[in-house]
Image (cartoon, rainbow, N blue to C red; front, side, top):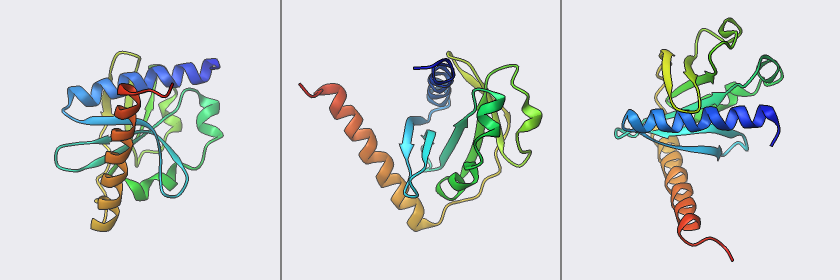
Length: 143
């Protein structure tokens, strides 16, 4: 794992913890139906889905323009960055979270764009199956 991947992993840890503190559950590295991989996908008790795209550096953000392809798979979209990241680079029409390895907090709320019922159903099934597979592997890892 290189330094940028290590930083992103630490931010993901803090995000998962923060979502748990907010009463939500979150999965990391979730492949979407369009083949893109969301860094964090969170689910709340009302069935609202939030995607968080982690940016670990200025170069990481500038080289990655695929983030709009996540919007059709969530009700809310956030960028998450570490303290000191040049947040002026990030679009104003997205949510913003500041994270570290221990937690995260919302700096700017994401606009809510409710999913269609069929897309929500598909995403909830994807979330449940992935969570179940990960639990099964934690309980019964391959030999």
